[in-house]
Length: 380
Image (cartoon, rainbow, N blue to C red; front, side, top):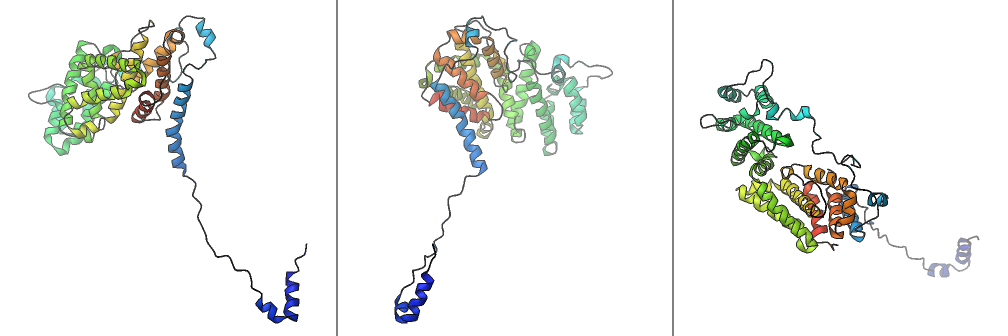
């Protein structure tokens, strides 16, 4: 089709100019620009995914508390699997640390060898004054208890702090050595009498560092103090709180198990730490301890129906040791757990496993997710 409008207007203009002038041109559309809503940033999408993905998994678990397993029939027809069968690569045994690493901090292997001679207390104090870091680290590796020994009215840590601000870095280095010894303490040495003596001395030194405010420079100082306190004198408290967590888990969401466990840990920490900012620095420890109480409580309920090994209480709040021990035992008794445990407890097992597995999410965030599901969710 051909547009002849221009020709028609030309003819009209030729024969009737007045008519052409009276014709009104179409009004021009005024410009009215607008900006469309921008797409969300990649960072926003990532945060939304991290927040919503765990909730979606937990909702699926709630809708199907006992999902079928491809090996269900096989497990139901067999006895409990041996401990070395069907363990996932992500769940290692409780003693997966190499002996070479642990020997650096284990006093039972810190005997002098070769031509090395155990230093006298005055030599350690002199090394602190001279900031002889290499000598202090050698003492840490060969004779760790010497760094805790009190001579006169001072320990090495107190001597460094008394010198003043110029030797603050030496004090922080000693505190770091204390924390590492705790983290590398072997399981079979926890209950030895010598270990109890060292833990008591450690607790005194770490509390001294907290009182001097060194936790502001040494981020894990408060957590190490709480670990030492629990390992030396806290077994009775742990057992009492595990019992409370078990009762809350039996009651389901009405029992508020996560809130119950977290409140118990915070009350214990507040009693032992007088400074409010020191307690604020304890958030990671509180979250770790809260999840461990839930795991210990859930497994304590399971032991009433199955024959299994309890989780040692000295694993409490030492990174993911309780979770590893929990999953080790769950994998060992899969068939029995599937047959005899209640529907609610099996669902709680799966929630704990799905939320606590992996290291990409902080313990604080894991506790928040557990609260949404085990305390505030619909439950099973």
